[in-house]
Image 1 (tube, rainbow, N blue to C red):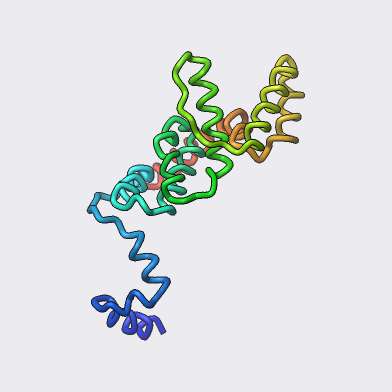
Image 2: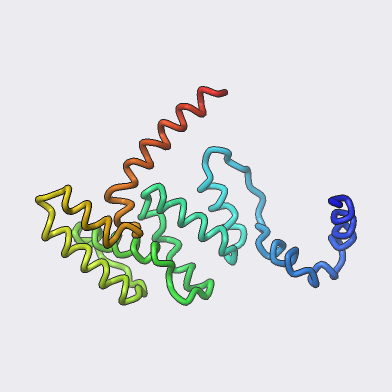
Length: 182
């Protein structure tokens, strides 16, 4: 079965008929134009290389920004925000919008100049509400966590405030376990 598939596509590799195969043509469009070394333990470097080799690679952009968000590296996402627009996204993904607002808030607090990004109004309003809830309940951390989990539990903001620390601690423990195997 696999041999038949391989033989069928082997013929197409060096011909123009590969363009007629949508699944292969799509993969060919994602191929990087630059060679790079694969870094086993540094996924972000692999994704950066894929994106650098092909700025139209939406998949690499999405995986890279998701990785940075999961690692809590919000500042690392900012250089890629404009690329979403260049790749014809209707709007930034919601979690990227949340990261932008969080980053801009920190920049403003530090007195730094802000970049202009297009953020949907609904995300801005949720950020305003998040800050209102935090300011109103900051003295009662248990209540604050409960309120934020209820209304913002599916946001990057909640993840950064509460879940990120647990994920980071667990991933470090898992890494120690994995390293002892070898």
